[in-house]
Image (cartoon, rainbow, N blue to C red):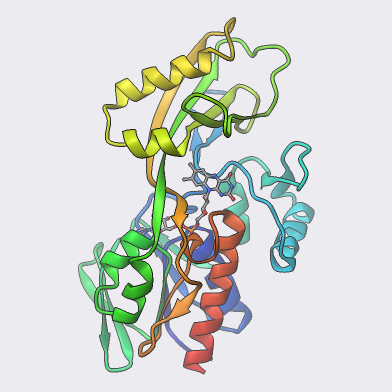
Length: 309
Ligand SMILES: Cc1cc2nc3c(=O)[nH]c(=O)nc-3n(C[C@H](O)[C@H](O)[C@H](O)COP(=O)(O)OP(=O)(O)OC[C@H]3O[C@@H](n4cnc5c(N)ncnc54)[C@H](O)[C@@H]3O)c2cc1C
């Protein structure tokens, strides 16, 4: 089928939408406003000779569905996914970084970064999209939009049936502190779970090696404090981490505040506009994790394909 389809967002939902369309013989184009592929599956390279990387968004993914298990198997075979630790159920990561995983998964796709879409409107049965980079309206046969629900709500103002769904979606914030140790403590694990423990942290996980760490604050602290001064937040999180590593010096690297991190209120499933070929995909429709976002992308591609065939 020769159709011109635009996918907005190069996170896992955008990539899976494009992969599924490709399996139907449709070459779509993905655009994303960020500098790098991956959205919330984010990687930050450390700026020194170590070549280490922080995982500062998603730390790992699980695979419960047959569809995603197949992706994991081919990633392990292709050496761009590996098991993370020894957990039950199993947890996985990109071999070196999350970006490593996504670049391999998307190597046959057409992706343009640093392109922000600012408006979308129907035009008979086509969809016009305003590309902020070239300041031009482009026309498509179909669009899949994978922005977090509140941002999608702003973008899809001209699609009332999608708005009804999108307005019900909400997210917890998350504050991520990236740090290294001056000297790696002995007996260091790769992952610390603080869920339901007193304090402000939810977990802390190593990056591409044992000296590179990201700590995430819990939902309660993040939702209350994401607008606070960055130095205040940095000090507060460093203090919390130090309680666990009394003998080790911690070196601060960077703080990142995710306004939309984990889905708080999920919307009612992946869907397409009643009237126009515009579908929405992402974690806010299927569940608060990487695998659900991937599944949502597949579903959105099916909906667009069925509408256009
Ligand atoms: C701190 C943190 C920790 C997490 N930990 C885990 C974990 O351990 N395990 C797990 O399974 N999940 C975790 N998650 C959740 C997981 O990362 C997400 O569920 C998943 O990555 C969502 O993918 P997505 O494609 O739906 O959205 P996103 O990854 O958010 O992709 C949306 C993309 O749209 C782009 N975009 C936005 N507006 C525009 C625009 N106007 N024009 C063009 N592009 C635009 C953005 O740049 C972004 O790349 C975590 C999330 C965060 C933030």
